[in-house]
Every structure is written in structure tokens, then in C-alpha cells.
Image (cartoon, rainbow, N blue to C red; front, side, top):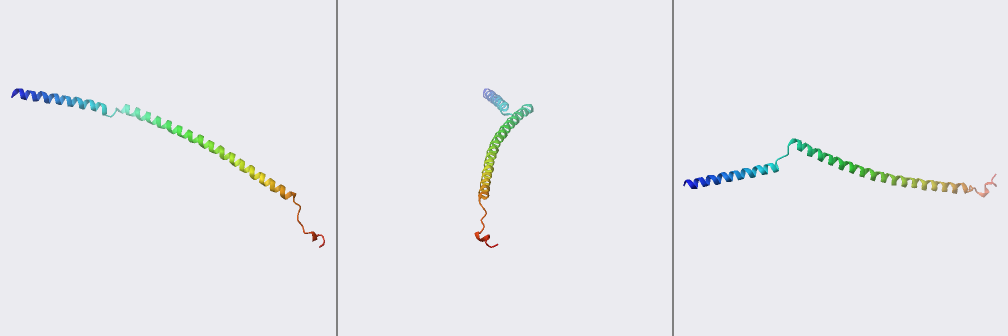
Length: 108
């Protein structure tokens, strides 16, 4: 019985040590990083986010600039069209002779 008891004790100790080693390794692999490493990772992520925001802003600014340029060109074209229309109407009205009844001279 002594051999059986010693064998079970050795098996139990080996199982315990194997479990402890496995737990230690898994703990090292999945444990949270130290505060210094965590702050470093947070800083890196913040810088990445800042770069993405900057790139997004620059892209939006370029698109807005293009849109403003197109709107300005269209507005200038519209203003030119209005000027031409008004000039044409002005010429039409200045070329016309006033329309008076013919008998206006005879009424005097």
C-alpha cells in the first residue's frame, strides 16, 4: 500500500506542478501589461487616431475647396449671363422709338 500511496502522491505533485506551470505561462501571456506599457500603447493609438483625423480633415478641406471653386465659377457664369441679359434688354429698349399715337400732333 505504501507504493500505491507514494505513486499517487508523486502523480498528484506532478499534476499540481504541471497545472501551476501552465497557469503561470497563461498568466504571463494574457496578463495586462504594466502601466508604462499600457500608457505607451494608449499614446501610440492616440497618435494613430490623430493622424487619421488629420488626414480626414485634409481630405474634407480639399473637397470643400474644390466645391467652393466650382460654386464660384458657376456664380460668375450666372452673373455674366445676367449682365448679358440686362445689356441686351437695355439695348432693345434704347433702340425702340417711343410709341405715340399719330393723332397726338393733331390734337394740339
